[in-house]
Image 1 (tube, one colour):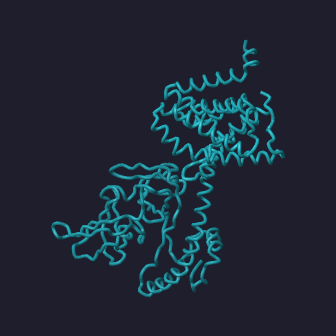
Image 2 (tube, one colour):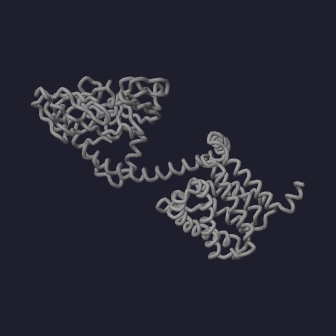
Image 3 (tube, helix red, strand yellow):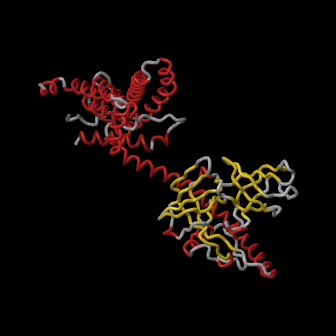
Length: 167
Length: 293
């Protein structure tokens, strides 16, 4: 059931990213909802769920952009695994740390993505990173923190974890 | 072995496995990547595309509906005034012994295909024989004349637009009454032929169909004069025309199914009349005498 819910959450993130999120874009910058879900799942449920959800959500995104099939799956898998492992070393159960984690995760994710997609052409990579990734990271951190607070309010306890994975 | 790997090093095994899978997908050639994405993506994204399309249509419809309500209210006011003029003109025509004015009865048709080339632009409409569309019927858009039905195949009708070397329309200068033949030159360029050098045609004059030859009903807006020059032999005027209709941007057109007597009040069905009254009721002016619907 937990796995199914995780998958539904990932699918919902993909659905929203493809339908509603473009309408809340500011100057073409939109929050990366699939990444937010990957990060929150990894922080809440650990490296196994982080890895699987990162891979499947990333693959779902890649299916819409077959030119780089596997790239989102690769980058989100790494982000999910890394954050799942790091979650014991810092407390991401507060809004400021959650925002900071999302901000850094977006920067790292896009850096890895651009490094592969541009084949390490530094000029292309850095220009895109500075003009697209930085504002996206700010927006993603803001939107992700609101989602985090909403989930915390819904579960009724501040900093409450969504529950341990049975994987 | 697998149990050991998945027990003790579960996270790392999973990471390596997913990374290898991602890397494998990345290393596929473009064609295979596209095939894989098409195979998996179609089932994953089909419901999303349906939702997205529906959402977009809904937002667009909402905005369009708001604009149309304002347009209907304004048109209703204009219509009330025009009906007064119609009755006055009808009375004058009757006294002078002229035939009664006729008005086109329009049937909306969805545009489902177009084939623009350097010789002609044809449109395919999703309404055909089943809806009594016949070859030769005029086709109009909100802005004005589009062309005429050339062929009807089952539920589809092929329309030859004015932007075709095969089509010509007799038009009249609404200001001076000068009549000429409108022909397509190329792209968005049209020209008015058979206009004598002494005729009164000026830049900015609106052109409407003349009704001569009965190819098109009289009075449908066509375009506006954008340039007037005397031909090299000095006998004719070379009149450049810009059509009101953007043939490339058409989405919905109307087939003129028949012409009805304007004063018969059969332009709208009872249901359409109710809708018109409902939408325009707060803004409408008092009914004029003999104003009809």
